[in-house]
Length: 487
Image (cartoon, rainbow, N blue to C red; front, side, top):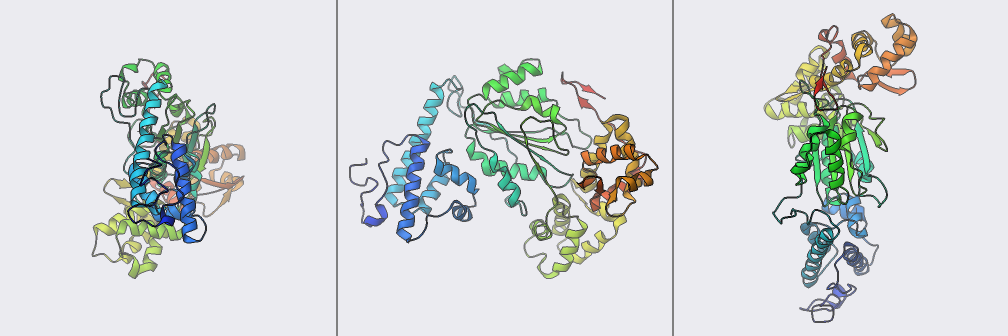
């Protein structure tokens, strides 16, 4: 096609010569690297045509809404763009009508060649098929995405490390942690959708339920069985967790997959679910820091900034709802402690009460004694989110229960306090008090921004002061290695 009429680089159909010049032959393109070379040629030609610099990845990201790191992967040949994105991208780069058709054919040829190479290399066959040729969809298990996630630009940039690695390396593992209601799951799902195209063999998702009220954490063996079935190999589900984990790792050896493990209880629940393949990446969310998870990159989530909080509140309250009462909206964001879950609940309450003035909800939240009760709507409950850390203390034995009993005493202190001040409040020795405080930090009920200094998040402090917390510790069951349950 490169030498005949209409080939790329040869103007036809009345197209200007300068618009069609500069694109190499497309008929022999059958790899993502060769296709990316054509994209780079289009990008250079666009710069010559406009008499300026080449459009940057960030500029293309702003025009398309795609992550700029993903766009970089397209131009580097690391990821094959889906058909609709490829068409959009080449149009933005000024491809002519005839070039659009030729480039679309080249893109399809690259996809077919990739599938053929997968079969030759001994993998389970082309994505979407099993050995017998029966259609089996590539797993796309991610929950529905939230279209906007204000205030998390830096965190999304940090998560750009989630990509297939070099042969000989292990998988990239990122562990998100943070207090209840800070938006860990929403960020993980949003990032996974943005970066999912880097992993053409699919995305696996499991809610491990390590932080759900009145629910048992899911044993790794149960997750492995579900993953093996999703990968089209239910017959490889042996009885033991170790055998299932081995089969799971074997299936992922030559695949590029993203695995999202949401609401993990601890590192022990996660380890059997980690692949060994360099082409995979894992995103884990948990309440506490999974510090013993090998090679993991840790990202701690904090509450939003005040401007981002107003954006989140407005997203849920509805267009224009806050514009006439900006001051009241700022008060609501403040009373919510800038936590995304609390803001979502407050916004949903405003949306459900279209005749309420925004000031009405601000006034209701102003009373500390009723604030947590007001931050509950339908299946969303800020108190339940904060209770997760308190339940986690029960799994830590006598020291955890001691910390739980000390919680309301410590919450009576205003502002930041030291170990010595906490020891005086609880009438305990300083070493014992420091152990209690560190237990509370581990389960995100306390913050420690400097050694020996602690403070409560405003909503966590209200939770800790509730009378029901003084003498109640909720017991929980934890999974054993054999998938059964132990107290």
